[in-house]
Length: 164
Image (cartoon, rainbow, N blue to C red; front, side, top):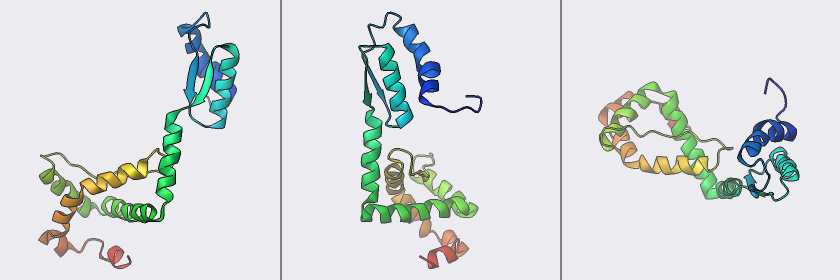
């Protein structure tokens, strides 16, 4: 907001209150609001509930799911898979030739549609889990690609794979 802070006051008065007033001018309809767990957003919810006395603020389910996904990703076996998955993602995004070959091979195995790796962010809810599922979906494509004579001949990323 013009370089200012997105504090609870801004979130409440600028982003939400105008909508609340339009939807419920008599302050009798809105009784429950779910926000993520960020402190300033929860504070915003409490501020809105002061104006709307029937309103209760709760943590949104997405925050809980995100925390659960984060805990799962901390398990050693999952954490190790994530590290390997990041290597795959980096390898195929940094090597243009390998990326192009994967793109072609992916189309062969997916009815003409290219299915590629998904980069994950630690802050995106379940991003690493989603990325792992996508990599699993690419299993047959990757097996086909790495056994391809042209791929082998090119020795793409030989240094990276030797260091693993």
